[in-house]
Structures are given as C-alpha cells and as structure tokens.
Image (cartoon, rainbow, N blue to C red; front, side, top):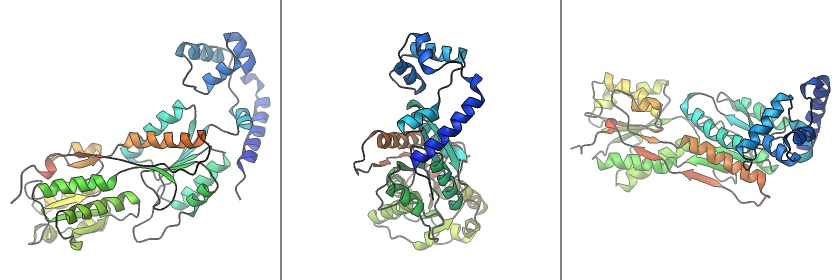
Amino acid sequence: MLLDKTKIIMYNTFIELVQHFCRSSMSEINLKRLAELTGLSKTTVSYVFNNHPGIPEQTRNRVLTLARKYNYRPNYFAQALNTGKTRTLGVLFTNALGVFMGEIMKGLEDVIYKYGYHALICTCNDDQEREKSHLEMLLHKGVDGIIAFFVTEGIRKKTSYSHWLDLKKRGIPLVFIDRYLPGENIDFVTCDDFSGTYDLVTYLISLGHRRIACLCKKDSCTSIKNRLAGYKKALADAGIEVNKDYIIFSDADDENINALTTNFLTGNDSPSAIFAVTDSLAIAIRGKIKQAGLRIPDDIALAGFGNSPESAVLPVPLTTVSQPREELGQKAAEILFNQLNSSPSGAVNQIMIKPELIIRESSGNKLIK
C-alpha cells in the first residue's frame, strides 16, 4: 500500500536531517544569515532559490555568488515539510528514443525550470509493468504531480489503465501527453492527429489519387487510431470507398512490411499513393517500392506523419505532417502547474494542437491521370 504524501515528506525530511548533521560542514550559514550578508529579506533570498520569476537578475546573481562562497545549500526537504510540496514532478515516457521524445522533454524542462521545479524522469521501454513500478516509486518520492506519455499495447490486445484511473481518483495532479484515455476526465495535450491526417490525405486526393493505401502501426494508442480515422474520413468525404485491403497493419521492422509484395504494388488494383501513419513506416516501405521497380513520386506517391529529421534529407524528401513536439511539452507542463496552483474545480483541460502539412517531392505536385 502506498504511503500518504505527508508521511512520505516527513520520512524524507528525517533522512535529510540525519544526513545534514552527518555532514554539517557542507552548509556554513543558514538562510537568515545569508539574507543579512546580502542586505535582503529572507523572503527575497528564498525566492531566488525557488526561481521566482519576479527577482531581478542582478539580485539573483548577488545571492547565488554569496551562497557559493559560504557553501550554502537550501534544505528542500525541510521546505517540503513546511509547504507540503517537494517541488519535484514525475515524468514518465514510454522510451527515450528519438527526436520526438527529446523535443517534448525540452518543452517540459523549459517550463518546469521556470517554475523552480525539478523533474524525475523515468522511461518504461514500452513495458507497462515497468511503468507501474516507476509510477509507484515516484509516488513514494512524494512528487507533486505526474506528466505521462503512457504505455499502450498492440491493437488487438486488451490493456488495463487502472493505475492511471486510481491516480485521478486520489486527486494527484496528472497530465497525459501525446495520447489520452477516451471518455476519462483526465487532462491531456496531444497533436490533432485526425485533422493532420485528414488534410494530408485530402491533398493526395486533390492530386487525383483515388487508390490510397494506409500503412498503419499495430498500436492501440489514440494517436494512431485518430490517424486511421482521419484517413478513412478523408476518403469518405471525397466519395471514395474505403478498401480494407489497402489498410495494412505493420511496424517498421515487422514482417508485414513484406506483405507489400511486387504484386500489391504493381498489380491491376495497386495503390497510386501510400500514406504511412509514421515517418518510420514510410521510410521502411521505400525499399519495397524500389524493389518493385517503382519510382517515387512518378509511379507511386508516398507520405508519412511526424516530420522526422530523416524525412527532409531522403533522396526524395518525404511529404509529411509536422507535430508541434516542443509545444506539446510546454503546454503539458503549464496545465500541470495550473492544477498545482489552483483549487480543485473538476474542470478538465484537454487540448489538441493543430499540426502542419509539409509538402515535399515524395507526393508529387502534378495531377495524375
């Protein structure tokens, strides 16, 4: 059973005090004495160490210079005992790979630092059991809130999200990022994957394509589901029947990529364009297109989603949808701090940020016949 937050803070404070007395030479003065040396109030000096935005840079530098000179370190655990806040946040990511996660983390860190907080970051290697273990550890550490890019399972597997629903019931500040649980009143920030895909597929249709295949990840997360829904809706609105044979579930390193055989790509009913729900899938299928003796975009158009760094430097640069990754991180952190600094109201803040269509050579720019 998880400890309540007050007990956690008291326990951590006790450990910190023991450590403090064991190394008393580390802090030669206290906050009151540091204030006297700087000629400032204790409140102003405290604001400096809490990164309060209203402190002038000259004042901040004066305090920090004297703090370094006298080896002063604020006791954050003692502050936590007084305020009930540890000034730390838990951040959970499915993995730490790629530019996508890195840019989200940059956006998060910018805001977290601005508010004078620190982040404890955990990666779950796409493993939900590891995610649950990390979550329990963060709660035992007494974090003030959680931001999560949570783990989902394959599209045909059932996954329990009871650990997140329990967190919400307990009133612990929580924000999801990039994905969400439909129908649950949990704050989130995500890219508007539906509209981004709808715009891209509509653009392909405007070039004359009516046989548009969709290469879809085997993932149950809302971002992938919404991209598939956007693909289907764009076809339907253009009066094009959705061909289930044109929807192939795969991963970049999956054998289902091999299902896109020469016959599929060059037969009588072969697609004239392929939309892949991620850039990595689009890049993976390029090899199969080449093996089939086809050229991009002359013989077949190709488009992805994500605007990865590789997409712009391919031999034929990839048409794609650009996700506002850094903005996702910034807004998620701002929403969490709004929860931390406001009285519970029951209001839910769920934001979808409009992405941008990036048109490059892979989709072609001429009407097909």
